[in-house]
Image (cartoon, rainbow, N blue to C red; front, side, top):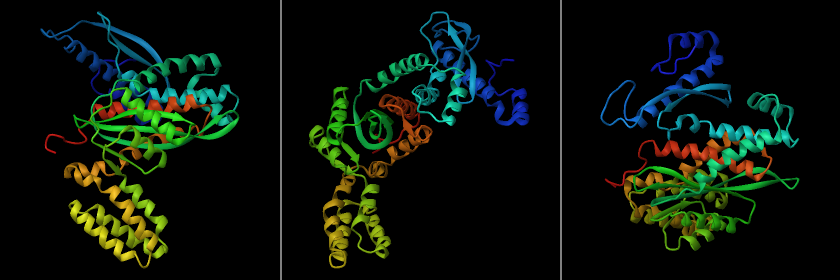
Length: 387
């Protein structure tokens, strides 16, 4: 039974959900994706079903079956065709890239003989009963081509640039090592966010960061007015070398966490945290500087190391006061990337230890590509018209 052109879930499917629960998910997914693809075709043609309009750009040409492996099993979709060619629905691919990357990472573990019984069971469910190195290599090559094109796509003007890093366990030369994953996101002149790039490497931190930042410039990144990041030493050197003269906002969230290292007594932590928040939430830079001066005087006798650190570090978190009030809350931290990092972790924790560096880059890139697509088609993040 097919419902490729229905606009709502059929009553039969709702009844199936009632009786079968989650077992009905594959059919629900099939119907929803089919509907999304049909709407894409209508938009591509410039006309709805059976509609005659002067703006029509082609003719529908039926449907073609395509079976794809998903986390809920194999699903056969009805892919809409157009007579003139040149159309392929993005809805079919968008939500499945990270699923494929996850499947491939598990499959690679299985093929290389490092998987547990649990991993073997998962790959059998996702990939079928037989998983060979040839199958994995072919699937990985197809997905890598798409992801590499996305990582190397041209960039343009970015007003606010966010930089952050996370780490994943990767097996390399018989050892388990920490791989540094560098991520860059930005807000363009249209007010929308995008993921600009990602890099995975075992190299020295400063060299890795500098190479990554230079690659963004080579791809056309321009117009950066503010960089927000943590105070990682390697990132600091690379940022100063590649983006000389661009204002830097030290992430206020990480800055407040760093203060804990200089608080001599546990019972002082709540008061120190409140004082720092008062500085960050000041109405303007003049008031923030006044609060900071008061705080330094307050602790110079009871916590001299803290007072010295405050005087040097906190001003690095106050650059945001030079920017529009309406933007400050969203550019004073790298929280936008913290949420992205959580989504990556949700996927990578299934793997725990990646079989190689390429596998890690593939899965992270797939998650980031899908995130960026959601951002770019979603609502405006910052308004540059009203400031």
